[in-house]
Image (cartoon, rainbow, N blue to C red):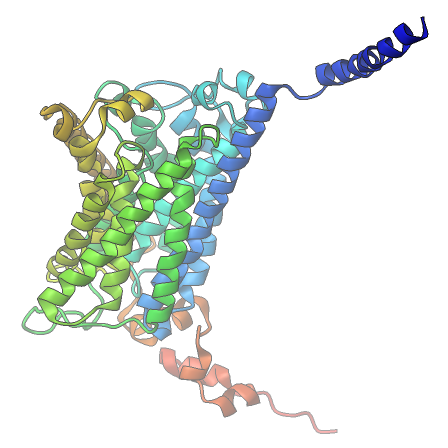
Length: 487
């Protein structure tokens, strides 16, 4: 009898522990909840990496600017990011992802949806597939929009009014970018009817940004002194190549949120494959760009090396979720050649200080078309968009879909942006005066120098007479210094 009781004790103990554990499990998170939380964390982390790219753009543009224009880049980045944040939350996200209409979404204004992914999916259809927090999804997609907006301004350095940043940021973040992203990312007609493939935005983010910059540049014109009497371009070196290099490395890091984050989750570890593909293309872009400029000019150009990395990253952005490892270095290397040749060719007619038209525009076109060549059929099936590329199928169908998407995006964004910048130009004005441009946008637009020691003698700074130097720089009479009061 005693032996039976002893033998029964372990079973009784397990049963006693199992009852409250089962009850606790029933009240706690389910496996689906845990999966959703993990995927939400990954998407939010990736969004932070993409947001950090703003620092990369700031350093890149500041480095490519002359010292007298360096400080304005800080104000521009902060202001644009902030305006776009509010505009995209209020309007843009709904147009981009609030429904499966062919042209635009119609739900989710101000993210007025349920916080539960399953319930929010009634308004944001992609959440049914992703199963992540609507807030995380919005923040991730907004970070993309902010990157695209940052690209616009690289072409306009050193001569555009600060007010133009503000006035263009609103329609761009609220309407222009969201509608185009809906067509290609959010279930719009280019994605569902044409089968255009763009995993993370070679067209949606980079070509759109470069196209907006192109429209502004046509109205803005070149910097003073860029072209000589013979019409040939003159170099206007930026003041800090170390800042450019640091900016490029930050952008490279941010891209590991950009492309891998577009998998929408961590489960399955697919994001790691996309990260490797991304890195291979960037590395090949640097090598190819350095080799190309050396063959053409017999020296290594720091700016070209940096743009080679960016071009490789831009080019792999669309195919990153569609191609096998072996295709990535090919795509990146071609982009590295394109960016060097493109910068040298474009410079003959257009003043693009950072090479954005080539690094983001031409490389973005190449990357989008590369899907039509290198997309693996298994990955097209996995993503549920389009079909295999020419290399695998021998068919030009997917390449044609990619070309159509590129053409539509360019025409629509260019038309909308040109009209927006034309209105800005005819109302508040697009360009600073020649006097302000010569003085530098730091002092003419922000009232202070980014590097005051380079322009104001130390004794004047220490004595509080820096205002005289500022006034002299702008060609206005200095204000009288206050006289000490007699006791």
